[in-house]
Structure formats: structure tokens, C-alpha cells
Image (cartoon, rainbow, N blue to C red; front, side, top):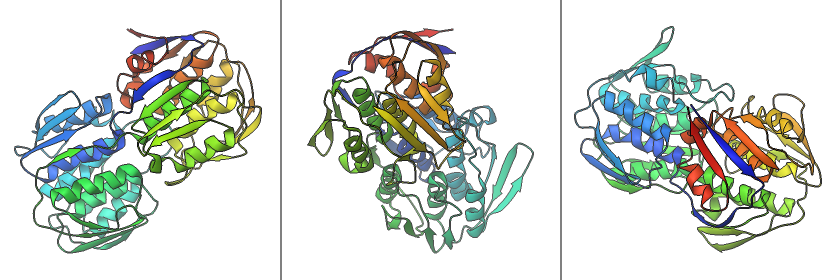
Length: 420
């Protein structure tokens, strides 16, 4: 367990680089199961979710080294088909092991995955799609067994536009017999990066970047070198943190085409910014922040649920009332209760809707990191609060942000990590 002690207020200024995408790295790492040989994957964030995924692969027989954000991994000797249940229960992304293990070995047994408590994340979408490919699903009390000795391509319409279900079905389909069509596929930037990785391995995928993906099964994939894209959510979080703290921050790894809706919200909120190139943005100091009538989360290319909470912090400093409509997860608004402890004026109407009235001064308090994204949000709150704030369960933030305290201290924050 660890906690962060933050001295506020502070203003973020200078330059910062965005880490590699967590949500691209996790499926890419599991996809290395699909081919024998040594992969070299660069720009991998050194975060606990990645480390846990690698420990799971090691328990299956994987061999790897991971230094300076470069992963060398070889799964040639992999043979165990039951990932370590204790680690699986600590990381939601372990669900991504099903597709590649099923594709390579014809069966897999996996414990029910864990992760953040932000709401329901049913696996039914995964299993219904896998059944369309010929799989048999056995549900035990605390685990699942998936069996399919001969995966055969099919047309699949997902029950929902699910990122991890799209990734799992892609990994099951790339080595299948025949063709697979995935309707209502996710198309986030990290899905596109994942598809590009599979294509470089030798997969035949078309429709990349759209909600319809077509896969022509191939007999063999190859180990490759690959560089992961910058993290869309970290980039957006840094930009919002700079705006909320009235900072002057240049962010490298902020891919403009990934953030059109965020920049639209910035325009509405009177956040000043300068696009320096397709990969770099400067957030400029601002005096007045305007309220946003409705911050509505939805599937990409709409506003990401993972950025809803940071935007909520910004709205505590806006001159008026803003509303939030969280369409994705019923537990995502709980961070507002922590903000109220600091002096914010937030009202949760129901599990999906809330209002925030500002501007309100925030004051240092003892607050708790409820989930990964809420934890990063509370850091922003502490930056703009008067006095000392303590964020409990800070290790949750480490699941998705590499050396976040050190990197933010380099641009004006005052964060002390205390381990216990």
C-alpha cells in the first residue's frame, strides 16, 4: 500500500512526454502468444498492469526481459493453459489471454478477471462471439473453461461495442480457418494500433479504424519489432491538469486526431491551447473557465469515459453549473464524493448523471483513490487545492501511469510518495 502527499496549490509548467499506451500495450503483449520467436516491443509503459500481465505470461512459460520501456519476449516454450489465478484476479485485462491461448492451444482455463470497481463489465459479449467461432464455454464457480480445437471464421455482431471483446475475437480469428467479420467492433486509437501490430505479424485484417473488421485467417504469424503509440488517456489527463492548474505546459505525444472531442470541449470551456504539430500541444495559462452544458461520455470517437473524471475537476473551477452524463460505467461518478470533501459543489443525481457548480476553492484533505482514473483525477484536485492533500491507495494510480509522481514533480507539482 502507498499514499501520495501533495502540497498545493501548484501550476504545471514546462514540457512532458506521454508514455506508451497502456490499452494498446496489454493486448499487444498477449498477442505475442500467437507466434513463436522473439518480439521486440518499444515504448511499453512500465506500470503495474503491464508487470502483472508479464508475470502471468511467465507462469505460462514465457521468457522475457523488460528494461527502459523495451520488452523482449519469446513465448516459444509456452505450454501451460491455466494462467495464475491470483494475478488474473488483480488485472481486468487478463481476459485478453483467452483469444490467443485458444487460438494457439485450442483450450484455456482462466479465473474471473479483476481490476477497478467502476461498474459492470460482463464477459457475455466475449463468450457469445467465441461461440460463433465454434467454442464451447464451461462456467465454473470462479473460473471459465473455453475449448475449441478448430476455430472456424464466422460473421459476428458484438452485443456491445466492447474494446476487449473486439481484441479477443481478433486474436481468435487471425489463425482461424476461413473468414471472420466483426460488426460493431471498437475502433479506439489503441484498437487501431493493435490491428496494425497484428497486420505486421502477418494477419490479414481490413476495415481498421472502423466499426466493421474483416479477417482472413492465415496459417502462421511471425515475431516482429514494433513501437506502441502514445497513451491517449494520459495525454488528455496532462492537458486537463495543465488547464485546471492555470499552467503553461507543452505535451509531446498528444496525437491531435485522437483528441478532437477533447479540444472541442476545451473550446467550450475557454481553455487556451496551441497545436504545435500533429504530435504536440501547448496548454496556455487561462483566467476564466466556462461551464460545459453537458459532458457526455460515449464510445470513440466521442468523449472517453476515462477522461470524464479529470474534466469534472476542471468544471469545479468553471463559472457556473456543468452537467455530466456518464453513459459507460455506473460507478464512475463516485470520485465526486471525494471532491466534495475538498470543498467542491458536486451533486450526483443518479449513477450516470451529476452536476458540478463552480467556481469553488478546494482545500487539502485526506481522499481515497477509488479506481485508476479517479486516482489521477484526485491528483489534479490536489494540485489546485489550498494546503496538504493525502491520497490513499495511491498504488492504484501506478496501474496506468508510469512514475507519475516523479514526472509531475518535474513540471511543478509537489508530490511525496509514502509506502507502508
